[in-house]
Length: 84
Image (cartoon, rainbow, N blue to C red; front, top):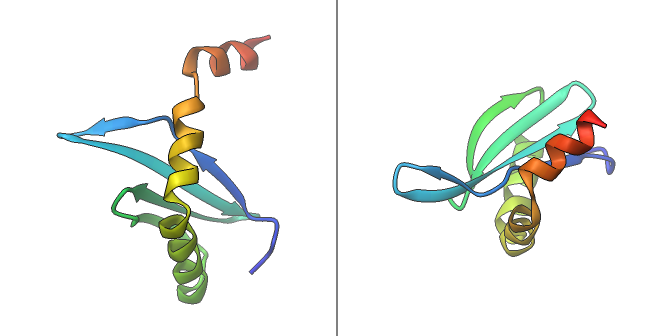
């Protein structure tokens, strides 16, 4: 698997009665989306089963760091930065 995989993290969202984060991994044309804290694969386009296993392990083992990232996201600030 390419060492240059990009990870995008959503802000904390509510799904039903749970607080969740969506994590998207991309590598060129390949992409996969997981929902935390369950580390459930929501979508896979192009990653092999072995790569998905590796991404699942990474997301599971990095939940603390991913949650820290999600808590720092300010959607208004991000939106305004794109418009400038």
